[in-house]
Length: 119
Image 1: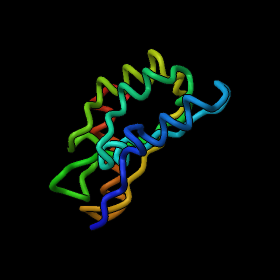
Image 2 (image 1 turned 180 degrees about the vertical axis):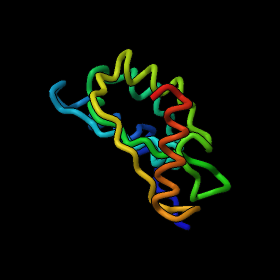
Image 3 (image 1 turned 90 degrees about the vertical axis):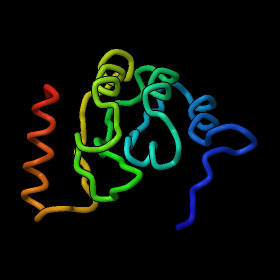
Image 4 (image 1 turned 30 degrees about the vertical axis):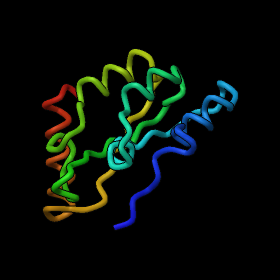
């Protein structure tokens, strides 16, 4: 599997873009993809306050590419705190690309996991 480069001349491409863009330019951070690419979502949210109006809630696991929300390696409480404290997040978008169960069962499990996290 090809690995997506995480840095250009030592800088993360998103940092290059968002440090140069006007503050009105917002992002749609995908948690699973950020972690898959070697990034940490919380420091990124903190570097660009108020710009994460929508966030893709997708979990990540090094060993399971079909992990459901709340069952992988995302530090959910830290992410939710950063989104709500500094990110300016208005909407969370649930994204599940691969299903370990039938689709509706996977949706239900994600919903139950989010409810356990207070969402």
